[in-house]
Image (tube, rainbow, N blue to C red; front, side, top):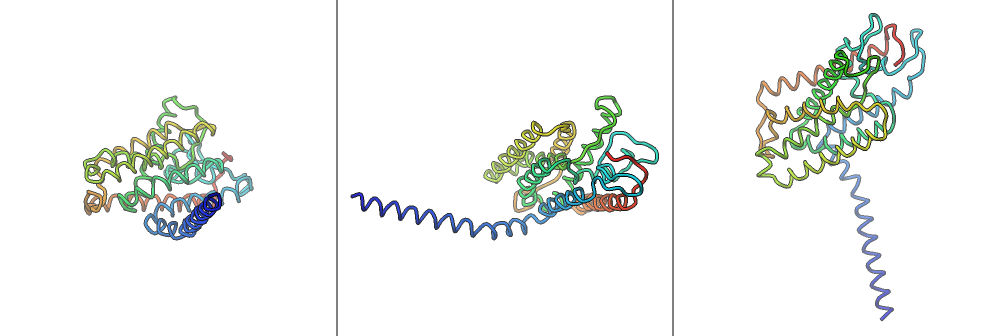
Length: 278
């Protein structure tokens, strides 16, 4: 009896090891499939990692007589100083979304964007994903600067991070889960809610572990995503429709301006004006 029991345990162990091995071998193919299905989301995360690499390489170095800091790299401050740059630089409202203060902030935002963005891209497409992220980041920056001017936020600080854009994507997922399209796709709606909650949990954990978390920007990004989730339809395969020519043109313009803003940020770093390191 004990012999048979031992054989059975060994068979179960061998079967479990084989299943674990098969799962491990399938990871590269699943990862590749995810990259193909959500290329814009993965590109966005790759851009965040690349910018962090630039941060690590140049921060603290002296260029044109001044040390390079986050302000030189494209952070969004809430004050403008003549000859030094500031909130009057339009491109900072985009460039700040790819900068991060620490590896922990970067990791949390990158994971959150992957968790939420990959599903948003499957439901809404690449153009909507990138445009929503951009608009949420810009809206968050505008509200934060306006609140600073109204005395609600201390002056002399700056904001960076992809969390506002992430909140915009979360808002879009929430609206999908509550839209009429969800009735015909209940499993997708449930998955959308779960991913939105998971990303929100990451933001809450990061907010408790990191100093100077910009919750005002998070709220603005979320509201932007919720508002966009009303008029923007999901793809036809998910109960929606194709974008109208005017909608596609408008969203394409948003993405184009975002790319232009990043180009200006790169030029600004190569030829920095006289400014302190922030």
